[in-house]
Image (cartoon, rainbow, N blue to C red):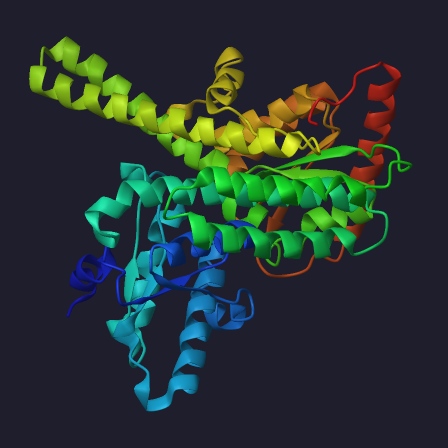
Length: 451
């Protein structure tokens, strides 16, 4: 079979029933909860150990690829190698389906699964392992992955899992800089994650979200007692950038914890924000198509695109409903930093004509999100991204002069798997500047409104 034929027949939306789904880890909490949701729907899923196979990933790439492409390739190759060793003659590569989503637009993410397919086909035995993929081009429609009756329900359950993962991360980042004793926050996070995964497995398919929210509230109640109220507020640092690098602790060398070690309280842009953006962007595209159909007097096109607009508008409304429910439950016990509304991020860009959502990519979210952080009393911004990432480079080009004029500390933090010898000096200098910004902000009576 030729390469192009393989890309068409072995990358796509394949039925997951009776297969083992291999899920790469991005956010630890989010991926664990999505895996729990999948198990509730009867799918055998394994979240693969991450970053230990990096050298394997680099062995089959040239170094010009996006860093997450190398990481995820290494994860799946090592996992399948271990499965082969463990199962011996009973190992069947066709029994595994590797999940790798994609996005349209000017980003290398859309090519990860194509490159991974080529590598699989070049290795003895792995040509039969298919790659399941969903794409932002159709708002991550599940297509043939699941039974027709389960698709819409699972989509909503999966979104709920993503938001729960974001909230557990924010509880960790809220507690850890102020914990009463070292290690308490991490222990709380691991226990809470295990509890929420169990709830997701048990109640997710039944869509008994109220029971899951009740469990979350019990988890949140324990959080406040871990905070030492005598520790004064620390400089607030907002982290934006490429979604995988900013969310994946090993690949960004646990940057948020490093910043905490230098005196910060950090917050990373959420994964749910990206899902909301995809729904919002699809809705806006449908609205433009409606306007075009009206100008062209295309009645059939008007009906189709108007229906698409209603569907995406309904989807986004539902997502915000669930988002608000989750945050309300947690904020009753410990206020955490709020998530961004996508329309507000777009207005941030449109008001000053800084960037356009029609360009796409994560740059529009990172630029708008950084400005939102600044308006809410944050003391510094970090842009996290893979080395040579085009959207994040655009983000840096726009943000640097703006934040310089606003006198808000800003650094770029690019990663390719190597360690920068001057990283500590950069972070210490940045945190000194952030601490000075906090002093000035508090002296002027400007309090942070993040939580």
